[in-house]
Image (cartoon, rainbow, N blue to C red; front, side, top):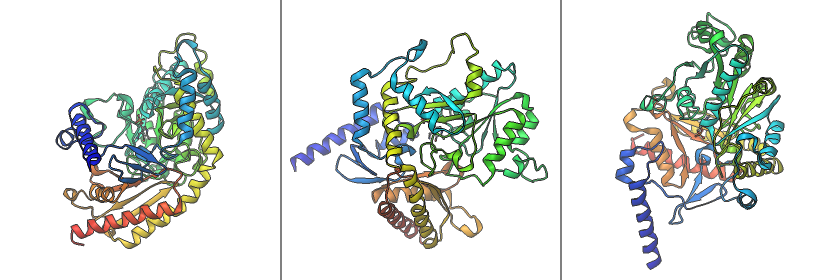
Length: 461
Ligand code: PMP
């Protein structure tokens, strides 16, 4: 009893300190100031995490699509600890280097498709995308085409929140937060294969990538950036042929193709990289998240040989770099993560679990009339909630259907994420750690089933 009281008072103390001193990302500051943190995580093991009272939750979204190998993996902790005892941190500026960063660079070159053989390290996804934009522009300068500066991203795309990446991000709320956006970034309608192949009679043509390139002039466009499968925008899988069509368009107009693999990379979709599904090789690939399974921050920008060969003509200091570029401890954890991915054949496991998740989502769609548009590729999935799915009638936004179902899941010990609320959509994302097994997927689906039922009861259906 006494122990419980002191545990409770510790939790209360932490909550009060959090409210007072901690401004949270992607959280309502007002609500947070009033209510404090929703949960304080105190431990994790495999696909579950727990709070200080010992209540456990299935981590149905791998936290932020990143804890791919699950929680509490000693091998990853040991890799960090061993490297920290050798040399925890060293600079990568001025030609300084370290072994884990070098070995990881070689490993990434061997895992990525085509000749994406050179890496520039960052600390995360936004930094990777900002770096990709800068290097793309710099490449064109080096090619004596300084007018090639424009970046085209896709609507519903998420590329991070730094000013340039945040401009490429199109999600309502994120895009124009505090007026923080730059010029020269254009947002194209996504996933229009026929239009990108040049069908100008298609009624959707206006605003597709090709249309923007032709209007702006290809001599002004540096790069197209897209997520092979759109994640935070709502888990949108492109139609067959789309990525190839964009690749062709980029080749035709000499535009660099940047694949943002921050979520898709390292097995999430059942292939090592998202682009591998469609046999497309980008010129630049941005990675982060799963590269360390989220255990420490790390990102990277992979460049193809042509870009690298151009950059090495430059005989001055490359005026770009982060303190934590090539962080030895982060790179050591990444090497261990990739070793585990290969050793345990995690990507093949994801491919097998894809079917299980798919079956579970289909079950939910059959059972609940309000559930529709279920989809998954590997262990990246979603379902949507509609008042009347047959007529695409959305729920009244005041019901906050997606958020409510996610909250019901939370009450039952499952963490999921609602996406698209700002755009009137009720998408619920599911992206559990890649090590999840069949029965654990079954448990997740049972909880979601129950949670949807609770929502239906609440609204009287
Ligand atoms: N790109 C994609 C596709 C992402 O999903 C994210 C993060 N959700 C980012 C970039 C930004 O990464 P970070 O939050 O590490 O800056």
